[in-house]
Amino acid sequence: MAYGTLIFLLIFTTIFLFLLGIYLVAGIYADKWKIRKRLAGLESGATDQSELPETPPGGGRLFHFLGSLGKFLHPKKEGNASDLRRLFVRAGYRSSRALPIFFGLKVFLALTGLGLMVAGKVFFWHWMAPDSFVYLAIFLGMVGFYLPNLWVKLRISSRKDKIQRGLPDALDLMVVCVEAGSGMDVALSRTAEEMRKTNSVLADELGLVNLEIRAGKGRQDALKNLAWRTDLEDVNNLTTLLIQTERFGTSIAQALRVHSDFMRTKRFQRAEELAQKMPIKLIFPLALFILPMFLLITLGPAFFIFVKFFR
Image (tube, rainbow, N blue to C red):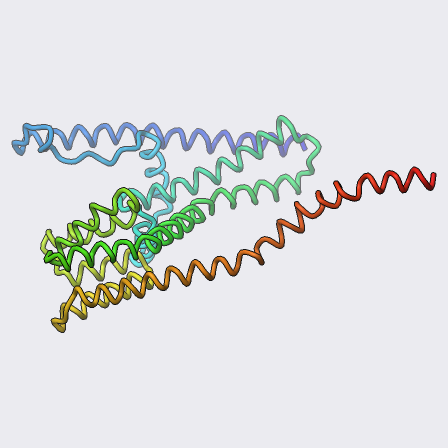
């Protein structure tokens, strides 16, 4: 048993020193990369600080370390990387460093779980059997490895919920702008500005549509990209409506007004559905927490009187 603990300590120390070496090397190469970029900018004539080439996104040495660590698990096939990038875009992470940092975080959390188990075995859980210790260490490593996947899924679900809640209000603003005489591009820009205080997620997505149109991309392609980024049925229906309206030359204001009324009705029906589900969801906390306390308070004194009487 002592030899097993010593072996785990040696493995943990080796992994820790390996990760520390990667961290230090990544910091050195990051500094060299910044210096080379600045020298390249000075040689090209960009004397102003704002004209210098863009440095890597912020985050400090920790993100550089995670990115360097994640390059070992980065998918080599472009198809797998594209699928993961699509998930990150839908989660709101559009940086090119998101994928390596994601895999680096998976490795870091898995090794952290294993390290915590080794430390607990050495300092606290001496009585634990070797088989149980190995199984629990593997379990914690797997939990740490798959925890970033859970975070990305929760992030995507939260963004979808926010976009779906704010879409009817955005449609109302678009109807007002279009009926006031504004074009579709101006209506999208104005709606993004007004929605930024109440729903920043939807405002960012509409702002990206406006930026793509200003950059020269067609409106239909920009709207299709919006539906691809959000992956929502309501947004897909809206983009299809706008594309067909522009293609057939019908009134955009009338189509938006009808669709806005439909979205408000759908939101009201969704709220009614949640209200109908509420009594069913309340059964479990009532039965597990409130009902036992109620019985204890009401029947507790009677129980003691009953025991005293028969004693």
